[in-house]
Length: 402
Ligand code: SF4
Image (tube, rainbow, N blue to C red; front, top):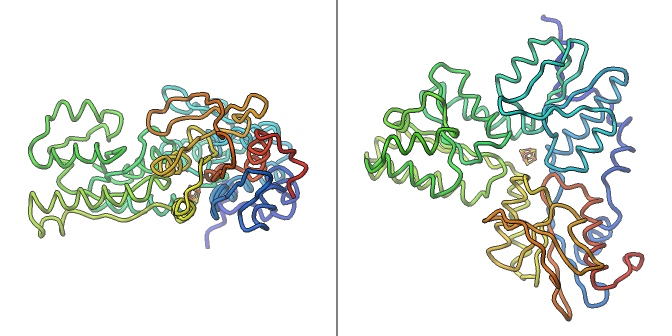
């Protein structure tokens, strides 16, 4: 039997009890607890807030943050680094910095591990890291605490199998997102492994147009230069396609893209060809799906205004914002501080254009119902802060809540 690897940890250090009180103090929230007790609805004066039944921290984020706290506790005297942000929430990342964890940020050429020594400890975030980063860190001989979410690992298995079987991994995602970069890199486990990342249905259509012989090779290569393997050739690598996705995309869109590409392949080459050369799996994680389902359920009885809280760079939050914006007036705020009760304004970002803006009188006048949800990286205390500011915008004292 081989000795356990003393420098690689995937399951924390069994120190949950030691960090639990700190985690609760840092991230739990009285107002969210209150909403839960009141069936996810609070009315004070003429303002009603309705919270989606699934929201905020997902299991992967909870686990990653907890392991980071455990790591600090386990190695109080060692330098601890984190590869990029642990999740897309500024408060959580700042809290880790305050604990003395140094967050390495990527430069144009990627991460620089020059300062990491074998005596250091390095935490990998919930999104995972690329194969090359992983190998570099393992070669350093430092302690690696891997918090990559199990749902991300499931996608990696799919992508790895596609590369092994000679299929190009067609990934619905954002090519620059940490998770997608890590996922795409899994094809490198096999010689010739290839990926192509498409952001949306329009980009999926570029693929099917090319399959139908209507594409321009040079234009295709130029457009996807940063979203495909360096050796990607559309004439060669679109013949066998396996679809996967970044776990936090809009589930409906991911499924539609898989269906669209498969149907196009069958129309062009026949069913038999598709059966042999096309694969698809829904790799949206259950936490993302549950949050999207909960928002859809809330929107069955549409509120006047929908508030979505989460980082502007948080993919799952943007997906929630896009869903809401289809049905009601929606404001995506990065943080509760974007709501200014004194001025009656809200700072928000449009999920489609990416523009940020300030809106006055966003609650309108008279009775108002505000629907609320939050991305998987938003802690409950920050959701509670937003609720307090919504009520305060109408002059309602937070102390009267509950
Ligand atoms: S959003 Fe899903 S895949 Fe990402 S960390 Fe959370 S549970 Fe894991």
